[in-house]
Amino acid sequence: MQRNFMVMLPAFAAVYAAGCAESEFSVAASGRGRKGLHPSEQVRMAAAQEADPPKILPVTYYAAGQLLERQGRVESALHQYRRAVAVAHLYDAAHHRMGLLFSQAGRRAEALESLRKAVEIGPSNAVYRNNLGYEFMLHERWTDAQNEFERALELEPQFVRARINLSMTLTKLGRFDEALAGFRTVLPEPDAYYNL
Image 1 (cartoon, helix red, strand yellow):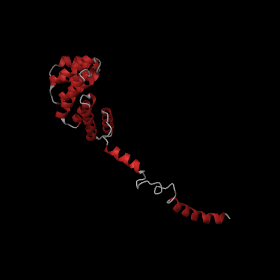
Image 2: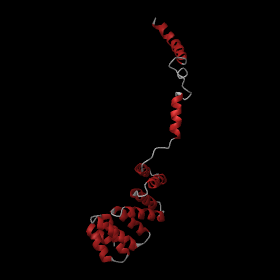
Image 3: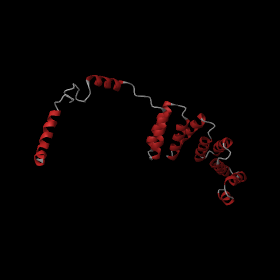
Image 4: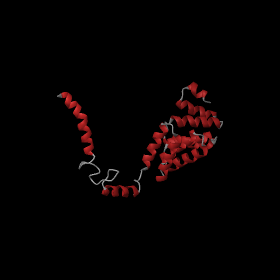
């Protein structure tokens, strides 16, 4: 008997499957179109497709840029930061990230422009000022670099990176005593002399 059941099972499944195609629960029997949607649902879907896309917040573009940056996809990250700035022109963090990426890519003029914009929008951000100062160093604009590092240190007196950058800039300006004094505040004595 079990053997007869096993033989009948595939036959029953084939008949059942064929019957399902025509059952009252099938797509064809319910009046649904070939996409499986009722005509009224198709109308709603068409209206939704014609509607304006939802507004994407600048912080979403910024987060996407950060993710792409971590993946090493610099141009894609820059695209997302540009989109963030297009939605929110005063988005200082996006201008800052663009400046850093431009700088890393050797696109100095764009880096300087983006970092300046970040500082213009967020003048009390010591990190922005330090990074703008560093970009000035790369352009060998020592006095501009010095001014930005000094402003960064006014905002955050214990900002070690800004102190080192200022001391390096003072060295380039030939102000060795001031540079050594700055290095000594954040480095061991041998390292302070080494950096001169």
